[in-house]
Image (cartoon, rainbow, N blue to C red; front, side, top):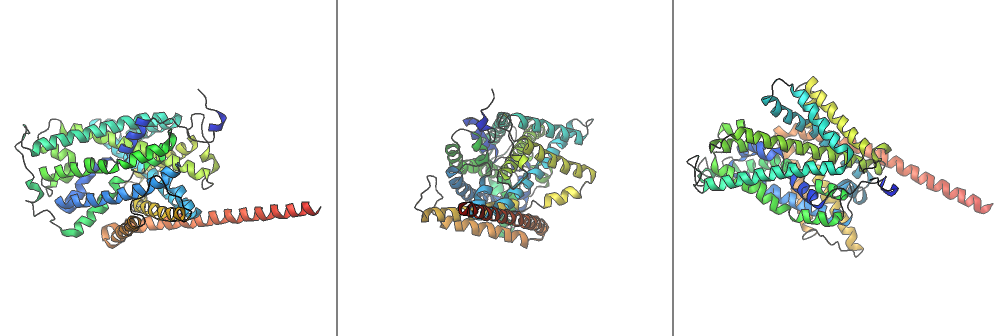
Length: 474
């Protein structure tokens, strides 16, 4: 069934309630939880629970601020659109392109990770062939209808949630001493390996740097909900549930990990978090099960990355900050040029990885090191300015940030502190500087383009005014 002409310049509304609900869950569960959390545990020890808790509080506050703006005005550009209104067009331009850059580079990262898993089981097929196939498959699903994206993400999310709940169930049984396949019980590992905080509080802060990027993607629901009916209601519902998802998926599962295995065992890093725990418990086929779940997780993350990058590019095109063709929409309500443009950029990064292993691609990835924190900072500043302006006009939003402006200022202080700590630590300084360099370059371009557009608009307005005066005189 074809859409009416009025819909041709706007996105569709093909995402169902259950799909938006599962997308909001999928956005907060990535491969980093199943595998990458081992790095954070090895860095902070059992005190990594404090790292996850503090990161979770920050993400919860940022999502609440974003929700206040998104419920009031759902938009596919999300915080980029709000930044343009609250801070200035140059801010919307800069953060929109940085966010697109982040997700475009995440596409090849996830595709390559998935390809490496498949190549280990099917060595006769080259890794680059798997990478190409994964990218092409998910690109095709995103090209024709948002329902395809929603369907894939729905089932990806179901599998990830079932995997985590299954892991939590096994962990609780094991801690209780009733696991039949291994002689384990209790939570002694929390404190019997050089204590709960073996490397001091500085390691807990370093753990925040490792964990904060695991949560990045929670904001995708504010973009996806735009392509559904009654987006404001869905956004508020999803954000209200964020705290429970953080507590269940991250805090509880990581608590079980550091309770069941020694945080300083080298095998934790070698095998990955969930696989090592299940192997210790003698769970049959632990490696195969975790590999399948991680493969689903990376495909889900790539699927979301391609979707999110294309919608941000579409929004930039609608606002004149990207080529106008990026804002064109198919009869199915899909911005195909934006999807293909984002895919092409991801393909180029993949080619760079295989053509120059360990060189160009590593440099490109380093430029995204602090983008998540910059996005969070822009969200907080935008909400601060928009809410202040609304209160001066006597407007009260239905979905409000708690204890405004105090928690907003606290969030800004926390984000700036974490950014400063990244610059302080030698192992993160290079990534921070590369991200700052890219941000500065995009910012300069944004200021130039938006300034030039403003001058042109002023010139046209002045010229039209003069022509009107001349007509009146005649």
